[in-house]
Amino acid sequence: MTTHDLVILGSGPAGMAAAATAVTHGIKPVVVDEQPAPGGQIYRSIESTPVKERRILGEDYWQGKALIDGLGDPRIDYRPGTTLWQLTRRLEVGLLRGEQASMIRARHVILAHGAMERPFPIPGWTLPGVMTAGSGQILLKSAGLAPSAPVVLAGCGPLLLLLAVQYLRAGIPIAALLDTTSTGHYRDALRLLPGALRSAGTLFKGVGLLAELRRAGVRHVRHVTALEAQGDERLERIRWQCGDGAEWHYLSTPLLLLHQGVVPNTQVTRALDCTHDWDERQLAWHPRTDPWLATDVEGVAVAGDAGGIVGAKASAIQGRLAGLGAAMALGRAGEEQTRKEVKRLRRDLARETAIRPFLDVLYRPAAHWRLPEDDTLVCRCEEVTAGELRRMADQGCRGPNQTKSFTRCGMGPCQGRMCGLTVSELLADANGQSVAETGYYRLRPPFKPITLGQLATAAEDASR
Amino acid sequence: MFKRLPLPDTSAQKSVMVYFDGQQVTARDGDTIAAALLAAGVEACRTTPVSGAPRGPYCMMGVCFECLVEVDGVPNVQGCQILVKDGMQIRSQHGARRLG
Ligand code: FES
Image 1 (tube, helix red, strand yellow):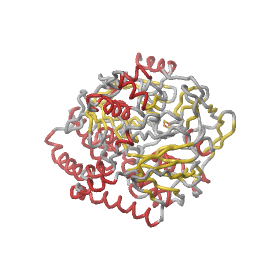
Image 2 (image 1 turned 90 degrees about the vertical axis):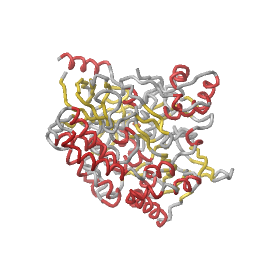
Image 3 (image 1 turned 30 degrees about the vertical axis):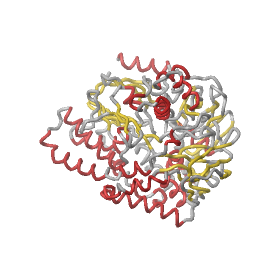
Image 4 (image 1 turned 60 degrees about the horizontal axis):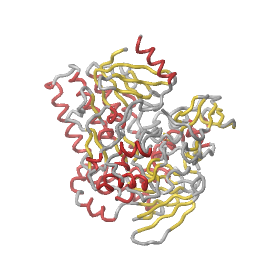
């Protein structure tokens, strides 16, 4: 098994910045990413996107070019299309590329595998034709694909607005933007505005997006309180309720794109058994980290959205900090030498993240968007409903690992990625206990399906 | 539900021929399997083991596993993570196939 000083998981802003920093300290990092090209989701396909007209995807997207160019440094061993299927506490890293599995050992690991969209369990969310706003954006960036009929976007959060604007600029009609932002949250968020003004640039961009939508005359339905996707075998129509009204509004559409924010993807940090804390403001689990972004597993740090949502720019700053942390842990840099840079990075990070409390409060999904009604599927893979989980709670199930063994909830191919947050919150609610007490799934590798044949190639590789 | 944007670059791109359940599908070089199928009007690529309900790609970023297909005889391939290759035989997955 070959040993590498530093293995970085993910080539989004955090991973790319960590690699670039490590290189300046004489480290030759291995950067592993599942995607075929660098950039993470935010800067996805910059080098190959067919959408070349810069104003469509916007300047924030094209800014990722500099980081991606940095990844071309010959001292960085960048491995695209490579899946992490195992990571042990002794820093043995199992990789899979095509049919070839391998094991390498790391002295230090930076997890920068980013975020995923928060589950949005509404009736009918499993119908073909219901997807996420993130998926719509990925299709646009990577393949130049856009909705072929007027599309409905629903939910809340910056990504939803950005996608709407990108579609508009590309000439794609929007049937409706159904906004689930809670009325009271505008008021609550307003109190945090002074702090948010420290990252005024981000704030004004958000306001600009809203203005662009308004000017284009997009049907923007506010205060949506209930939403259902309907159809036989595929999405045919949606219906929704607004404000306090009990009246249902209907719209036929072949495509509904949902979004209610992003949350850290904790699959790997969970499997490593890092300590996680429940963040009530972001309504998500965060691996616990120190000021160097190190977790409580020796030699493992987390940078970027994987450790708590901070956004692309702050993710890159965290990547640099984690890269410096790695250099120090590996004895390639001293505290004296890095002090100035660290001070500057921490100041930049504080400025970039100043807007987070404002965004977290404004776009916090209301309880009924996170705790669905009894008939709604929570676990997409094993088709377990909220009602079944509540019944399990009545029968004494306190946590997700118990409901898992009774219902298979969380045992399907996605290994709980799509239901985990909902299950923890739902059981907490049903049992009258905190989410922290309720806990999360215990996870084990492989993180991704791997066949026996592929495993055999890893065993061969390891014994060499 | 998706179409190619009429961009100057899209038409210039090399096309790739794949098969979905035996039917020929023209894809763009650089497409993931899931993107190519969506562009070709395929909405569902599998049915669930529990109820047999049809499913199609949901997240496009490797977390939901709704895009599972069989590729050249290998089952449970995440269509949104793998790029199309000329001549690829893609099959929809049906019924009681569980992982692990
Ligand atoms: S579409 Fe979600 S994993 Fe492929």
